[in-house]
Length: 375
Image (cartoon, rainbow, N blue to C red):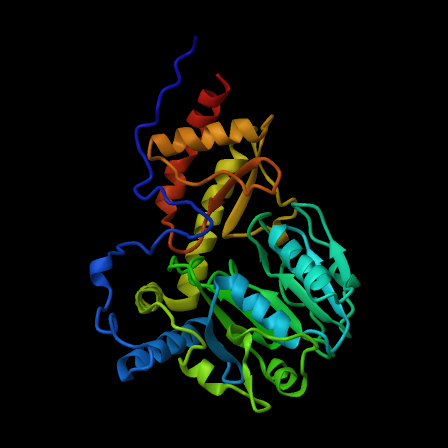
């Protein structure tokens, strides 16, 4: 039997999970500002820290003053469902799905809100035909399909004169791509992705057309308290100044602030994008050099640079599970198995909090785990 030699160098930080993602380099809990901990989020310090977090996000995202940012419960899922439940129903709806989370919004629109939407689907690794989107409708889509590794290439397909609203689930896209905010009416994300923050809280971004919808449209269904963004017919502006609807974790807020401050230190938005791009390029080279690896996303123009999904020759779920287990046991890579609903394969997070040297060190370990798992 041929002995398969373990590589000599391991990734220094083998954190390649697609959510929650790797903490920023140099992160330590001791570095978090403890001043707001144990204090009310409605105290002077609590409100100030929440507003500071919002201001940092606005700066890093280069968000225009026309758009509002709110911290809401339930991670990205909570933020996107809040948007759906409060704003849909005024116009016909189109939903796009090419991975599991997009399918989740289809399910909500069809089974929960009973909107009878137009559904445009594509298989994992593909995009639906974006030219078929009718912009007289409200349109729901994921900017970056975390579980398929497929993203929309840009915002050119979103009509400037759209009558409907563009709802973008952008949780693996913000801080990794230069998003065209004039094309997005509603965007949602969570700190646990590209920032490497903690889960549980979502971020809701509203453009002026979304605010107009909220103030002029009353949904046909009842709204839970945590979804209510309007009071007496007007937007609850306090939500977008740090006065959260429910009690936030100030520890999670301080962690997000720490990540945002780190992001500024590496060059802001441009620095984060450059780090993600470099990581994706390093992984792409690993794939190109190996006949047994491939990209699930067929078209490079729509291939994610954050949640990169890979095909493995001859792989089934059992082989992928064995590969992932071998890598974890060696502390060479954690959480690299593909999403449970996706085709059997690997998924490597390449967002900005990962160091390129760790991606490069991963290649020989993938070889070792693949050969060992097959032996």
